[in-house]
Image (cartoon, rainbow, N blue to C red):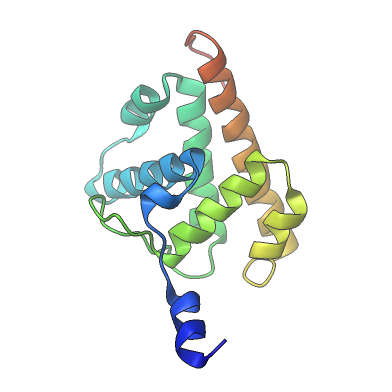
Length: 147
């Protein structure tokens, strides 16, 4: 592979529409949650509307909090209307996809250089809890539940 093709491959940013559905929805929800946080609004009502279940919304909020705690640099998000994902968003999409498949080895492979073991455990656990709540929300009627 020549250097031009290698550079293009290393710097390519995928489009939202190219991501698996669960990953794309998570990236868009993260953008929304961060925008709300910056404006001093609570994203929970919109996240609940998006997923039809308060527990999924609460669990996603824990994913956002985990990212805020463990990410080594400020998490780069693209503007809500941007069709391309940032490099951090692309990594989040990859981790969501790996977690949805239950593929911890792939999750660790993509995050090991950036996050230590405890940070990876925290993020994987938060994503697993969110995806389980998300799956339960799509499987049955929305019922308020407490965390």
